[in-house]
Length: 91
Length: 377
Image (tube, rainbow over all chains, first blue to last red; front, side):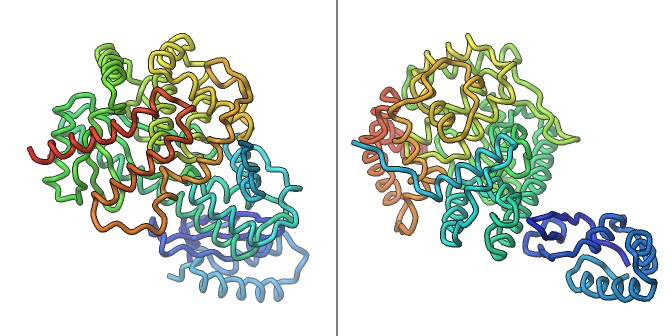
């Protein structure tokens, strides 16, 4: 899977929002709210390059005091949500 | 007559706009406990004044307790994103036009819009309207128009000094004159100045994007011209804060390169010093503008400032508020409405610039006659 290009992450008050576009077509703009760990993962993943869920699990394990099983569950849920939001593209 | 006070939403709008153009934080205390209705009014004012992305961006930088509702946050984010995408589209279109015009060896100058945006702290937040191209040589202007027709682009009826058309919904205006006063003494002077700039090749080269360099007007003349543009629209049906922001951000960016004596020569020669002083005082009072950016002297307060301020809020971008919910059955009915509106506003705003505003009803009639004759040819 790949992270979409041209994502724009913005902190608004206490929350994070990500804006994603479909090229220059303004009719395909999506806005999704994110939690802090999702922002951390997006900011540490290269856009338009292949990555695996294990890459994200490792990132979470490096940063947060969490066990591998919980990290995997969190990542699976996050990936599912971000695919629905059009932020992650499945190949 | 005592001027009416500004409303709460207007005050909030001005706070956000000043913060946007001078790259500072708005006062969060002003926005705490602002209700949804007031925020909605700020949103509408931002659209009417064509500065929406600038305002929304600053609103979204407020602390949590001063933010608008989640629905408005989403709306603001979408509009900011649309403005950013529009910049990309305009850049592509400008590159395309540049390539096509250069292939035909046409000499042209970029005016206003995208060139003005470069003077803002975040250029992509400055909403764009159209691409304005000026051809110093009339033959080049005609060739460019002919090319647009041959390409099959949707073309508007040719105005007296410009031809507009659309390239994939981007509105292009080809100009064969940068401005038109309708009074010989000013039009002849303007022509002489432009001839001089052309003969001495004093046009500036501007880096529009990483890969695109274009010519634009020389700095001192542009500082004058941007105000002429404000006064022109203010005199007819109204001007918006976007045009004022364009002028002050230009002056702020380029003040060290402006020849003050030459600027004063232009201002006096075209009888524009007084209206410049009024608008400068307005920018100091309501847009937190540093007085030192203006290349002329003036009092920071002026009795006409509030008249102009309220007219700007009433008129909206290029006077579009006057046309809201109006339906016209023909172009002549619309022109008649505009002419009446100009006369009605004339009574209120002529003290700002009597030299330019009082003759307007006659200039407008003369323009109509010229248009009829031109179209009959």
